[in-house]
Length: 352
Image 1 (tube, rainbow, N blue to C red):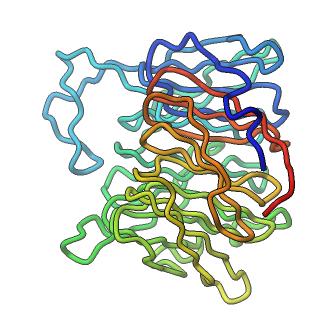
Image 2 (image 1 turned 90 degrees about the horizontal axis):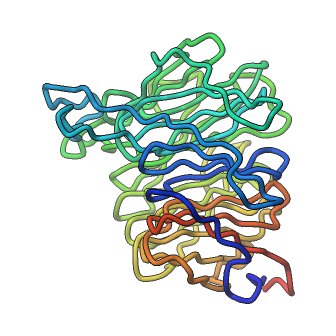
Image 3 (image 1 turned 45 degrees about the horizontal axis):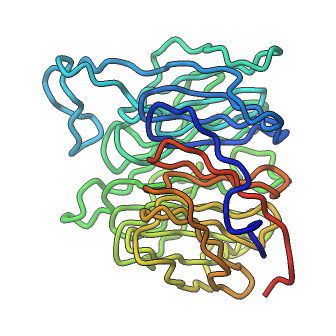
């Protein structure tokens, strides 16, 4: 696998703050990004220019300094601090969802003029922290999992009905045997699944554990493994092959398989990726390569069949906050604290 000439094919500039997340629309013709200042931007991939920008930042208003997320304190209102966008994701029904660093959730509708229109009432709220929400859709409803306001918990919401359908509790305190804070979430749905009862959720935790939750059995995980020694900060799931990829704060990547029949994680393989921590990762749609964004600004590409680092791309001058593939797998977008979005043109040579 090659990454063009070793440099990004294009760089999207003009952001006024660190770019914390990005997501392609289902057609691959647009990219939606969110930054630390609280702006959500829509980019047209054909022209590589911004079509629309919406500011969803909020001045913080908490006066008691208490954080419902546990262990984190919101800035006081006197600081006039704004809430950065931690995550932005597409959802069924031409819907987009953005998540603020301090828990604010906004729902957006994709308009015919290729802009976003906010349609929520401002009442939805997740817990504060670093865990990004995960979206899914079944029974013609949009379902979202995000960190709960009680540390260590995960809430699942039906956004169409504005109903919380279930919660999972990993245990908030590591000293009491709990998993600590939830650090990443991924739905483990398969294309033929049509029943909510078949939906399982992958969660990674501060104590280094990987847990699989079932929406029918919210009281305990159906599977739990602890492959990492430190917090597992990133994850992805590929449904066709059942590939689970997790990355830790020590730069360790673990690749495993989910056995649907036996409901367990099997065949874990560990791979050291770089010298610094992993911030995000994404499995390519053809399930052959996983892209890993690191704290040192590098993007690593690793083979899945025979786990190894294929190449490392260097452009960003600061932490790579997120990586995401276009639906056809031909372009990877990486976002960074250096206020840029790099687009990497990918093509296959002889797979090792």
